[in-house]
Amino acid sequence: MNVRRHGALLLACALAACGVGPTYHRPKLDIPTAYTAPQPVPAPTPPPPDWWRGFGAPDLNRLIALAEQGSPDIQAAIARVVQADQATRVAGSPLLPGITGTATQSYQRTGNSSSSSLLAGLPAGFTLNEPHYTETRTYSAELNASYEVDFWGMNRDAFRAAQAASLASRYDQQTVRLTTLSAIATTYFQALSYRERLAIAQHNLTAAAHILDAYRAELQYGTADALDVSQQEALVAGYRAQLPAFESDYRQQVIALAILVGIPPERITLGPARLLDLKLPPVTPGIPADILRRRPDVANAEAQLVSQNQTVRQDFANFFPSLTLTASGGVSSLALSTITGPGTVVASLISQLTQTIFDNGLKSGTLGEAKGRYRELAADYVKAVLQALSDVETALTQQSFDANQESLESEAVRTAQRSADIVRAQLQVGTVNIVTVLNTETTLFNDQDTLAQVRLSRFLALVSLYKALGGGWELPT
View 1 (cartoon, rainbow, N blue to C red):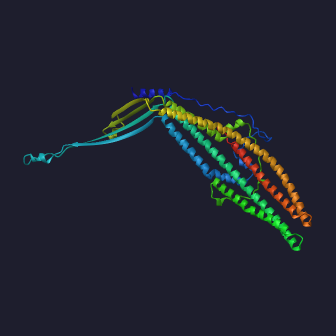
View 2 (spheres, rainbow, N blue to C red):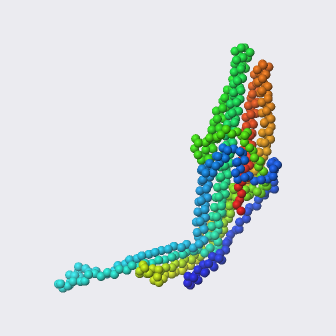
View 3 (spheres, one colour):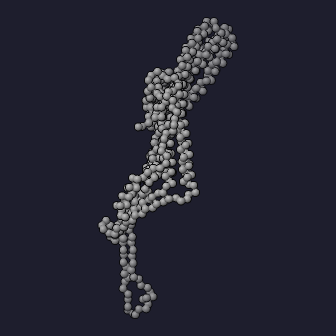
């Protein structure tokens, strides 16, 4: 059989290749038609890709821009994508023949030689001619091609498994990015909240200190007793003791921002923004089924499942015989200048059929392990979908209750502020005692601090909702 006929057979074999093993089907999911948590009135709209800009916080925009370029977590995820792409190239290499080239030069020298014993037996004056040598140089060039005919689709399944794994790495990179950006927003809002709570404590400390000064002056004139002064001193000391904790919490959040962004903590600065000055953009989740194409972690879980299904198919095909074709051709010549000329043509063609007779359960064990891994990943995929639905429900519920609580707490602060203003005015004319003042001041401070925490909770719930909805990401079509 000549090389042309053998090449035609190779092409026919490749075209006739068929796959074996299970076909992938997405696991059955029980997706509800709507979320049970209260939702905003506006029509459902997916989050924009730059969802963080809706808060109207220039510092947050700047921090996220820095993170896009320098976050170690994001950069590591991008590097994993590069690795997966190269692994796909490796997995796809057996789909085409492997070709190698070889060039050889050989040198040989032959000739006569004399010995001293032979010269000793010759007549006087008789000499031998000088030894004669013959030199031979041979040049040859050869190409070798080897190809495993993919009858059962094993190589193709390995390539598709690598392709799915590469997609999974891309989805993972988007998940890491969304998680990092959400963490930056959460940490930023927490930093602002601690700073606001610090300001509230400082303001109340100042007000309590003024009252303490007034009591001390009255004590000198005999219009107040030592117990009144002592009680107010205890209140002032309590307010002052809270300041270091708020300052420490604020600084820790700023340091955490530096780690997330990827810059030294000394280079992080935040402007004078307050949560009260920022916006709370409305977000509506749409229908639960949308979560399958808007959550990169869900897409990652399914891509891993698809990849493992191809691995199962590959291990299944490994039970069937494999056919390897090896062809070589070249030319040999005594002169380098004629290596591309007629010379001596060398060609060979070898086909090899291989089938495992006994492997002590190696292939069946490998297939069983792959099937077990598939079942594990199928359960992980279902869990990822359920977790995504739960994340949306939780964020919607938290957002609704926080909005209601903030409204009620704002009214409580306004009421406490009016009471504090009245009590302080009455204190100046001596119509109230120190106990009333202390209770009123404590109530005002607690309500103000609670309001700051509730306001923070609203921002965190909104960030969680953005993250739960995929942060504007959508599965490429």
